[in-house]
Length: 83
Image (cartoon, rainbow, N blue to C red):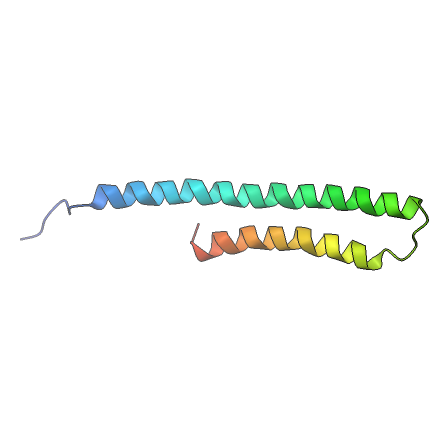
């Protein structure tokens, strides 16, 4: 005889919905942080360049990869948890 309703099925669905909502928020948060890092980095690089510092390639790459890391971290969270 097959049971029509398994115990705990509603709770699992509820937990899955909460997980989806929290990690979509984490992805959005990672993208917002990447944008903030990009803006702050751009302002700092522009300021240093205007002050006469011509060797800014290390700083440019550091800020770029910090923002890229945040984007990839959000994508990684999304891929690992299947969201």
